[in-house]
Image 1 (cartoon, rainbow over the protein chains, first blue to last red):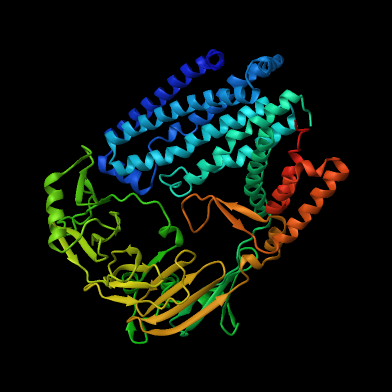
Image 2 (cartoon, rainbow over the protein chains, first blue to last red):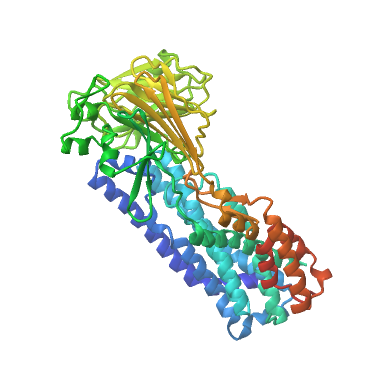
Length: 223
Length: 414
C-alpha cells in the first residue's frame, strides 16, 4: 500500500524534484562562480577578512530558495488532493487516514531533507575550496536555520492547504509567520549558534500539525 | 486521540507565535526613549555638568545645583570636549592648572576606549592577520595569511588556502619556547590596518597565562606578560593608540576592569563598582588632565573622574525609572504572562528565550481562566470535561492560551 502511495506522490512531485534540482545546482554553481569572482577581483586576504570580520555569508543568494521550494512542494502535493475532494478516496484505502497523511508528509519531508543535504554538501565543498575550515563550519551553521525554515514552511503550508476552513488557514498563517521570521533574523555567520537546537525542537512540533486538519477534513468540519 | 494531540500541538505553536508577535506590537506602540542626561566633567569648574535633550531639538545645560547655562557658556566649561569651538572663538586657554593646552596637545592626548555588551556576546571566527609591527613603511599592510592557534600556531595562506609549514613551525616554536601551553583558550587583537601602529595579539594559553605575540621584521616576538593567571579574564580589548599609556583593557568574569600598561603589562584596576559586563556600556575617556570612566545601562549611570595617574577624584551616580517600573510595563506583565525574546541589544546572537513577566501576570492568567470558562459554557456550549486540558494550557499561558483555545476549538472527537 505504501508503495502505491509513494508512486502516487512521485507522480505529483517529479517535476518539482527536477525543477528544484536544477535550481539548487544552479544556485550552488552561481555561488561557486560568485566566490571565485571575489577572489579574482580582490586580494584573497581581503576577501577572507571581509567574510570573517563582517561575518558575511558567501551564499546569501540561496537564502530563500529552500523555503520557497518547501512551500511549493506543499502546494504541489496537497492541492491536487483537495481539488474535487479527491483526498476522500484515501478514506476507502485499507490504511488509516492518519497513517497515509503522515506518510505523504514524510515523503515531502524526505525530499526536502535530501535537498538540504545537497545544499550543505555543496556549500561545504565551495567553503573548503576557498576558505579555512572555521569559515566553512560557521557557514553550514548559518545555512541551517534557512534549511530548517523549508521544513517548517512545508508542514505549515500543507496544513493550510488541507484544512477545509478559512478561519483555520488564517490561524496557521499567523502561527507560521513569526516562527519562520525567527529563522531569518540574522544574515551573519554564526548567529544561531546557541539557539539553533531550540528552533529545531520547536520545529519538530510542526510534524504533528497536519493531523488536526486531516481529521477536520474527514469529518467535514466547518467550525 | 492523535487529532487531539495535533490540536494541542497547534495551540502550543499558536501561543509561541502570539508571545512573539503581540509583545512586539505592544512595544512598537508604547516604547519610548529613556531621557537620560549626558554627564561631563568640567576641567574649569572642577565639577560635573549635564545636558539633557528636551522636546524637539532644544537641550538644557546645567550643573549639580541646577544652575542652567546657555549652550555657548556650557561649552567654554568643557575645553577638552569642545576645543574646536573654543579655538574658533579664540578662547581656548593656553593652560589649565599649569598643564599647557593647545589644539595639538588635546588631539594627541585625548582618547576613548569603549565597549558594550554586544562586543562580548558576538560570534567570532578565530582567524587573525599578524601584521608586521616594525615595517619600514608608514602604513600597516595586510599580510598574505591568517593564523589560528589550536594545538599549534598555523598560518593559512589566503591565496592557496593551505597551511604555510615553515612560518607555522617557527611561530609555534617561539610560543613554546616562551612557555606557552597549547591549546589556546582566547585570542584577541585589533585586526585592522586603520591604527597608528601594531601591537599584535594577546593569547591566553591552556594554563591561563597571557602571552603577547607580535611579528617584528618577520620574526616572532613572544613573551609571557605575567598577568595573573587567576584573573578570570573574559574579554580583552586591544587598542593601539599614540598616547602609549596602555595597550588595552581586560574585563574579568567578575566584572572588574583593568588597563594593561603599555611598557610592562602592569595592570591598573579601574574603579567600576556595580559594573555589569552583560548589561552596561563602558567608556574610558582620557584628556590631558583627567581620566574618566563611565558605565551605564537603561537603569542608571556612574561617572568617575581620576587624575592622569588614575587616582580617584570624584564620582557621580544617577538613576532613573527602569523600564520594568513603567506603567506600560506593568500592563504588559498583566496581559502577557511571558514573551519570547529573539534579539537583544546586549547580545548579537539570535535567541529563543522565554522571559517571564513576574507576579503581575497571575492577574492575566486568572482573567484568562474566567473568560475561557464563560465563553466555553455560554457561547460555545462545550462539554468542559472532554477538554479540561484547555484550562491547563490557559493556566500556563494566560490570555495567549485563552485566545488559542477559543480560536482553535475542540472537534466532536471520535
